[in-house]
Length: 134
Image (cartoon, rainbow, N blue to C red; front, side, top):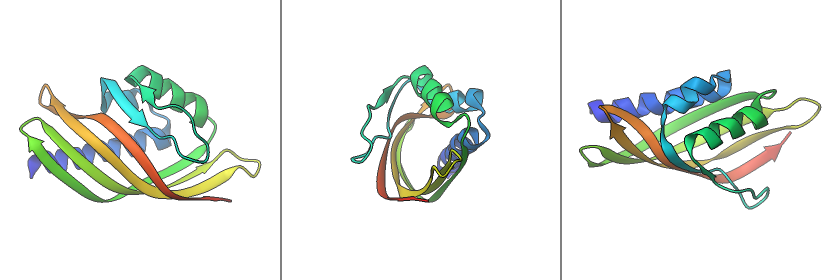
């Protein structure tokens, strides 16, 4: 249970880092060679490879946006002493101002690894179910 709770705290930090634009905190929750896919069928894009690339991308895209991210109902499975997977229901709100805002819903599918006794995100894929442009 300690490992599962630690992973829940890790994900909470991920959401808080994005919403508060704390890019150092965001970098701290993932491994250096993290693989992150937040693309979707509507907007396309390319998956991110590497912590620096992802953090720089978030900083560029979200620096002026007001964001609110919530993760719910985690399904965390320990797959080994230092590995785990998780699925999180999610809701996000992103507002760039001037009428450009959306509320989104979906699931994060993730892989975690314990490095030096600390859990980190190793891979993440966001599967959106819906995006409502406001």
